[in-house]
Length: 349
Image (cartoon, rainbow, N blue to C red; front, side, top):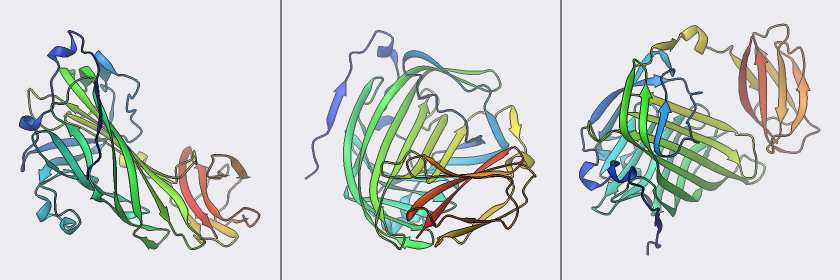
């Protein structure tokens, strides 16, 4: 039986009483869509700006070479992963990024999981088919929050090995702010509410030398102006994968989309980092670096606690590094080259 949810509604001020409220009647409908503009993934999530009467200033966000992404509500039965979410009635999709699968009643919105694309893990399918995740309770307004626990399974690849582990997780959903959203082109949207969902999925992977405890952490911010539509006007979503107890992410992906086109654009030349390959991966004690490195290129190796355990100065193409002195596990390698930073993950058997 579904467990009881912890729900708390804080005392509302006279200002928050006028705030917009998410409920079943203003849920997005199948077919709803909005053309959004891709923004720099390094954009801050402004997590510290909470409460009523606040201002979120995104006037200087940088676009990704005029790239656009469609945010739309789709029929789950028409999507490639339909078989994984048979109970979902809607899927909120951010094009080429993340798709959230859910169903709703007059009292709550329930998530059956999500799918996202990641360069290293491939297509990640999170299925909450044992215990669904409640992500909204209706009505849901400023300062409301609740927590939930959920469970199911995952499907992805880890260092080239297919993984289908069981998982369990916990989440906290809240309307953590109400106020004014500032976007480029002198756009000011008043009476906006910000929905925040933080969830953590705990699981294990088998990279070939024993089980590792891994967690997926998602922070999703959605800004709503319900006076003009039922889809978010701005979204900031980050997903990181890290070893349980570690402080350095193994993988991290952030997607930022805006309904207003940024006036500043990042060119493709700026986006393209110098190619970097570290092989073999997994390694049995030696790794090799391949790339077009500058004379002052260097690399740093960190363990899963974030502790720096090796430095390689004057990095050269084809350079070999002995890491056999390290314990088996997952390590992060940060390469500084031509003023750019690139992070890779190395598995040591």
